[in-house]
Image (cartoon, rainbow, N blue to C red; front, side, top):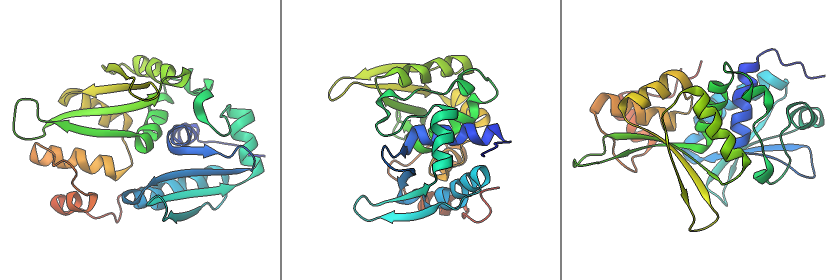
Length: 233
C-alpha cells in the first residue's frame, strides 16, 4: 500500500502530471515528456522525486521521433493510487481536474503550481518600448476547460495578479500571464521553480537586466558561470 508522507512532493508531482504527464488509458504506465534541454531536470530532479514518493525506479529515455526525453514507469499500485485516491484521469486530459487535496490547501497550491510551471509553463521577456527584451512575463496556457478555470481559481487564491485572454484560432486556448518585475520576483520566491530552463532565464535577467530570445540553456549557464552539478538538492 502506498503511504505518502510528503504531501508537498506529491502536490508537485500532481502539477507535473497535469502539465506534461500522461496516465495510459489501457496499461498501468505513466509517462512524462520534456524537451532535450530539460535532461538535467528530468534526470537529477524528477527521477529522484518519483522514486522518493513511490519507491520505484522510473526509466529515462530519449524519443528520437520528437527530439525529447521522457520518463516512464509502470505500476498498477501507483496507477490505482493516482486515479482512485487522488482523482487523476487516464488518457486525454480534457476532463482533468485539480484534485481537492490541492484546491483545499493553501499550503499545497505553491507546490502544485511549481510542478505545473516547470513542465508546462514558460518565462518570456518583451521589449516594450526599448531595444532589449527586459519586461518579464510568466505564462501558462491550457485548452479551455474546467481544469483551466480551476488553475485560474488557485491563481486568485494565491494572490497573484494576472491577465487572461483566449486564442480562438484553433481549439480555444486560455492564457494566464503574470507580468512585471515585482510579480516575477513574487512568483520565483513563492513558487521556486526547479527546472533550470526557466530558472536560468530568470538568473540571466537578474544579472544583466534583459534576456536574449531563443538563447540556449547552455549559453545562459556559461554567461552565469554556472554548471548543472549541485543545482538540485
